[in-house]
Amino acid sequence: MALPNGAPSLRPGEVEIIRGAPAAGVLLLCDHASNAIPAELKALGLPAQQLERHIAYDIGAAEMTRAMAAALGAPAVLSNFSRLLIDPNRGRDDPTLVMRISDGALVPGNARIDEAGIAERIARYYAPYDAAIDAAIEAALAAGHPPAIVSLHSFTPFWKGVPRPWHAGVLWDREGRLAQALIAALQGEGDLIVGDNEPYNGGLPGDTIDRHATRRGLLDALIEIRQDLIGEPHAARAWGLRLARLLPDSLAIAREM
Image 1 (cartoon, rainbow, N blue to C red):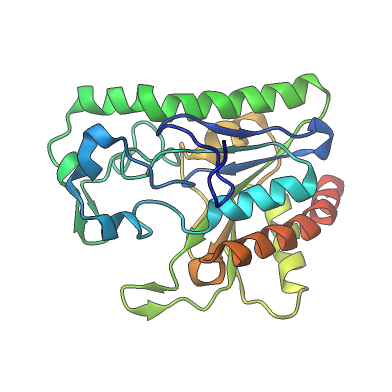
Image 2 (cartoon, rainbow, N blue to C red):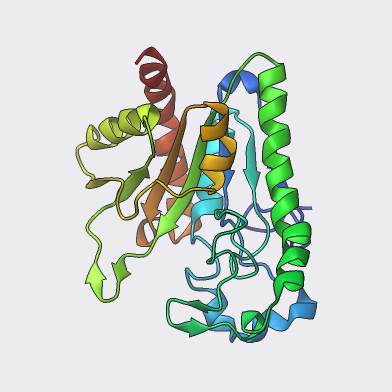
């Protein structure tokens, strides 16, 4: 059964897996696809409006990822739990793995979490998502198609009251061949302000790209789209199609570098 926005009906912690052809040469990831929190955790003590903010998930990123996967015929792996439970885009030893305060919001359900509680969340949410990514990569490698890893995120239009000018940002670490090709492709559209390692720096030890792409020597890029541009499902899908149009040539360029 599918929900109206195209998301499958999953319990929090179950991984959303989109099947695709290994020959597509890419695996799409969406680390912060959902704001789902299991009922027994009582929204971590937060009011409902806080769960609609960026602190709970990357607004628009899931719909964008699904549209991009469909257009490319590519596999994708999406989380199905809120980043407030545990952030899969962090290393297990990262102090921000479970946030007690996020962008000014106190998270009561995380305030007194201990090591055992964090370990339980790793086992229930983080590890299954990690394993699904590993399985998708290994399947592509076994088929003879080493996949580029493209992780899709979104960022807020303002930060601490300051507007962010970028429409999109591409993050990278180390050699950044695919990221640079994508930056050039986005700039070539003529209507976009594109951030090069903006609004964040792409070098984060232990993050999803580091764990799954860098350590295997795979091409990678992390794409950030401003949330006001993809807040509505139709707009998120349009951006997914736009990125799907630009990615194949960018991959070809990166592989020739």
